[in-house]
Length: 397
Ligand SMILES: Nc1ncnc2c1ncn2[C@@H]1O[C@H](COP(=O)(O)OP(=O)(O)O)[C@@H](O)[C@H]1O
Ligand SMILES: [Mg+2]
Image (cartoon, rainbow, N blue to C red):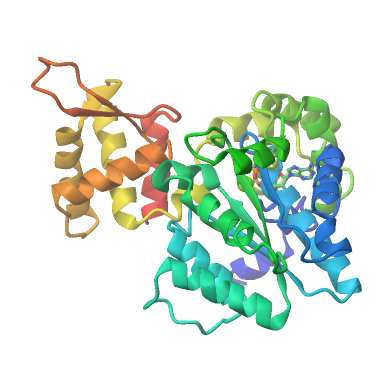
């Protein structure tokens, strides 16, 4: 009988019971080691439910990658909506990723679309969108809790007007119900007078929360919950868990810990082993670069991806810390040819370089005078060029 590879694959045993619980988008019901933060949020926002419309709350959350900022704000917003629903208050939540919605216009549009799903994408100014948002909230007696995630990247690019305008929107209506509350989230958010007026600043300083890196012990508790949901009983050795947490504790990054364990499980399946041993985690560590986060690279426009690939290749070939923008452009043109894309002009490339720099995906600096005249130098701070090249080549396929 010829072999049936599909049946083979389907009947294969796996160490996973429900792999989806290890996806980074999954938000668990319980968030161990973030109870205090969740409580603080609840205390700050409870008036939205106990006396709706009385005040508009603004809050900032800062913390490193993988410290649970997105998970906590999503879970919290969900609980707020549930509690409001039980009291017949029409509270909506909206999680906006400011890396994807790159302008104030797009953010406001997303807010408005929550209530008017068919609203056209074009034809209005940002101010008009905000005005319409307020009108629809008033007309339908609704409230909105908006989470501006990855806000630091947005502020670096566009300044903090968005926070200012959103808070002013409510502050300016003294005798009308306050319908909009905001949580801003980012790795580092600027909190100074150059950005905010004194009264907003003093509110924000009181309402800012910093999420610290997770310790190895905290990571263990977080990972253990996931392990129970995602893996068959008894397949993950305790030593494997320990090692994963030790490795991830250096960064205090829960996302990295989860990814390592998931990859170790995959490794185990591919070797047809029914035990996830520590060595698979070591292998996973060698294969993963926590800086190469899919949700960051996947949302880049194709040409930014091509440009990054060009920079990585150029840096790899020259074996130097920095290369000039001219060298990257030359490489970019050959990369474009390889991928069948029409190369864009210098001014456009310059804009992408700025954008990639704002996202900390590349480093730029001016060359010192005398070095072939003054030019912009491009380097990579976070990832080895070779790893980046490998990763982008896969992504661009
Ligand atoms: N306290 C926690 N309990 C359970 N899972 C967590 C916890 N903190 C983070 N995670 C998980 O770790 C991953 C990364 O968390 P995330 O909220 O995306 O971090 P951040 O937004 O700070 O980069 C997500 O899959 C999230 O569900
Ligand atoms: Mg996040």
